[in-house]
Image 1 (cartoon, rainbow, N blue to C red):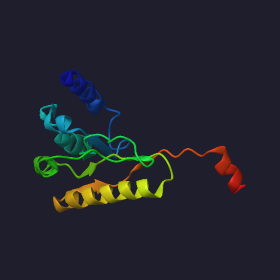
Image 2 (cartoon, rainbow, N blue to C red):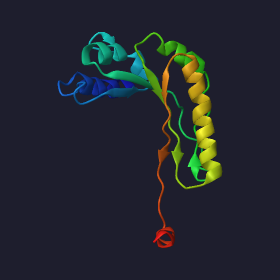
Image 3 (cartoon, rainbow, N blue to C red):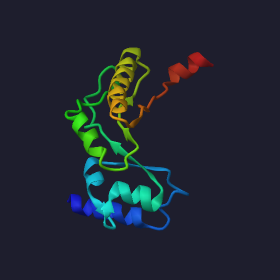
Image 4 (cartoon, one colour):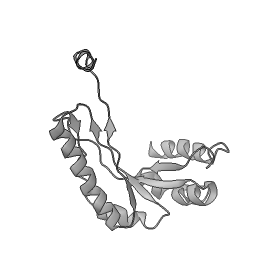
Length: 147
């Protein structure tokens, strides 16, 4: 199955319209980073042939929602993954967490976790993307209070 997924991704990455005029960076899964496109590692193909900056997705999914947010599940062996990424022209990393509600306690959990992991990533020489998703819904009662 992963072979078919990689073939699809490779078709996209080798398309003439997939270039640095339209795409600045690409986020790769670990498996994709380790595979090849046109005889080069995926990251090398992106950087050398397409002038597109490779990033590595490092999170292992989201924990159950609590306090209006979803923090990342623990990332075992993050240092080993980052050491592996040093073998490729990977510039930075992406990690996902989600804010659903304007809950101060939950948002503090997300921010603390994002910055803790970011420090670990920076210590290995990579640039982390620290950007929790915000999926805030505004209730009609809140709109009425604002007007």
